[in-house]
Length: 210
Ligand SMILES: Cc1cc2nc3c(=O)[nH]c(=O)nc-3n(C[C@H](O)[C@H](O)[C@H](O)COP(=O)(O)O)c2cc1C
Image: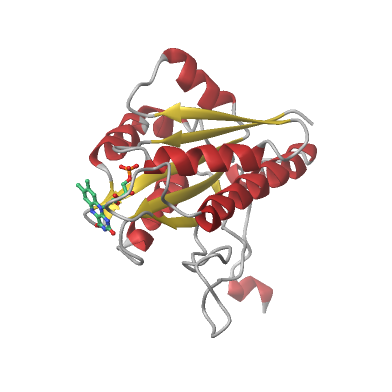
């Protein structure tokens, strides 16, 4: 099935870009799925069309000062006219982030990405993986070593370039998120929506039921 997944990200120093590429690799593990990388600081009409037509959009931002980066927030604000037109309604969404500290307030960034998706009426896809590296036999090589659930979390050492850090475990965690979104998008595409959520009907009051 032809599934199109956009990975819309910002990266100041290349680490988020490396994770975005891993997400793309994961998307393309799913037969017939295409992952399109879009740098949100360099948007053209073509990019906006790709997002409009995509079955899913995966948002990615580095964590800067416990939040999405400034350029990513600018992108969020740029989507407000689409929000009003409900252009991304019922599209699948997911997200990932990276920071240099182990925790680094990454959860706050993922929460912002989740809220962005919810404002657009999108359907959020969680990471769907058990946490790793949380027992005496765990290691940083474990998938989901940081224990995210809202989305994929990665950690990059502050003094190393994106060729070296984050480790493969974080890249594979991101790839698994991409594959999950692509698979769910394929499944979602086969089912027709009745649109009932936008057609209010009569709800009997408690009194009438008694
Ligand atoms: C302005 C700025 C703010 C940052 N704030 C945080 C932070 O709140 N928590 C953290 O763990 N790392 C923080 N970092 C580190 C970055 O999240 C980390 O270097 C990340 O890998 C950068 O991704 P990028 O190369 O895609 O920009 C910050 C870095 C910058 C430049």
